[in-house]
Image (cartoon, rainbow, N blue to C red; front, side, top):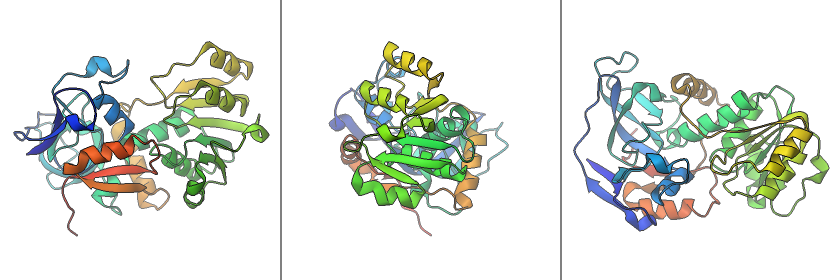
Length: 324
């Protein structure tokens, strides 16, 4: 089988397309023929050598990729929930061999059945980002119908899903993005849009129940400004796991009697959460946003595009073309 591997850390050029043996599933695993994966910021961070959180898990050579959508080819002896031929999507084992590959094995608990209404390319846009957005909006953010949520970085892979999940809950959604993404956010359900560079947030100070910071840009001054948006007792959720809250930010949150927390781990409740996401997709309440599709052989170009940090939705790696 063909798979992308790296033998050293560095730029996009370190990724190699190699021929490897097809893996065999353990008793609790499934073998998946991968049709599509996606490119996440974590992928190029890992390719570069990781951050303080990821570095201890990275052993060369290694594969890349967090998301996979495909067809079950074989199930381990203890697997009861899947059978050969099932269409599935999920987040494979980490650390592991990644999802930039024609076949992978992973614990069956890390996959769920795909929505019936979408393609493999669309399904690959969901798993890791959808789990982060779901946890940030619903679990940590405790969003309730009618509340006001402010999503910073609303057009990105996590942000666009956070907008859709918040609207599905009946919230009033304000999102930041570049102006060329305003119409796009309105189509997703955003009630208001703001230019994250040129429009001040001050008029919203003290009016927001939940701030969800999904931007890939680490900026303490912006985080302080976002904290000012919160009502007393509000909640601030940030995706920037590798950038700890400063003492100044902690003090600002305390002054608001606000809760500040991180989201980014995707190890919780895979089957139950992905199954809930599947329902929302099949009900037409949430859709995949695919920016560009690259063949597996052009993975370096896909990473360069991702590293611009101006991607709308997700970049997809098409491993195998779907025939319908």
